[in-house]
Length: 441
Ligand SMILES: Cc1ncc(COP(=O)(O)O)c(C=O)c1O
Image (tube, rainbow, N blue to C red):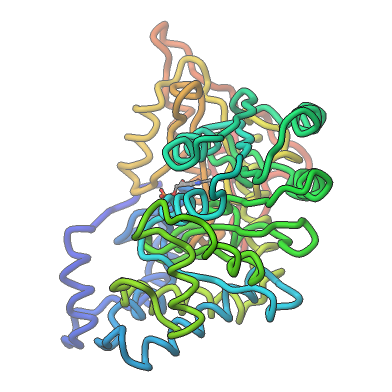
């Protein structure tokens, strides 16, 4: 299988597409058909894009790409008020909030970290906050909180290890904690942390519960009402399927109302100000990245049109397909599947394989994956399955990975991995394509 990348032409073609220059446009449907025909005929895929098998950024849908180039509007006119209101309504629908009249969503021009910093700097006041961490993004919540909140507590579990609820409860019994914060999906390991249980502890010990949902919202259920979540953050560029650059905080209206009583710790990221502008003017306090709002609105419409549960199920099916395929390549995963988020798989790197080489060889086929960070550096790689990745492209990824693993040899010239023999029911057939069929020995 061979992939020809012609990225250098893409910007010219896209510009031509928007200008309507005859004969130069590459429309997504034609593009896919061409790639499919090439794949079926020659085992050759010809794509003019990277395949982003990452936990974000993602390959965006064609209509999201078009939406970003929508008309020029002024953010102080009613056009923008309507756009923001529509995004807010759609965000509350995405979160499947049963009583939306009790919730609001503010949108921030800034990546997911901006929304997290807005929550951490605006919600705690002069009170105390407990950060529960089991990875990189829990640590980041802590680092941010320390800047804003003198009374920041930390319970830290090793990266990739499940949260021990008994430890948290014991801590809450001994200390006065006003706010509890956690990353729902700890992206560094792919672990999904237990919101219902921590939300119940927050309720029992009268703490406000805030959640970093940056890499889970759009892929997993975050039930703010049932799980006692006061505020939850997320970003546009991950499972929601839009461009990076916007983030948002969804919160209970009663909790938003209380924020005005706190001393402001930042000006730009003050949630109380965002809420005030939203409530009273249907606007944002500062100049928003309007084109990104158009794109986010389209990405949210796409999810709602498909149906939120259907979108979640589709992401899970893609994860299952990838996991099945990678297991067949004798690769192990860092976590038990029951602990994993459905948008990302963290794969143990065969000891003799260099992750830099693996990424480079995949990149040569226009496939982008993540490598491990911190204590996982050089030990794992990460494969995401959000955004516009088709089953056909997943099959292409698996076949490419297999070829790399089969040809990669260790320093002592032995094959790095052994591919498991075909088992009954293998290879799975995806949209008429055998995922690994041609290369199975
Ligand atoms: C759980 C989590 N929180 C926060 C962030 C930071 O988001 P951003 O890079 O968009 O600022 C990330 C990014 O991957 C994340 O996965």
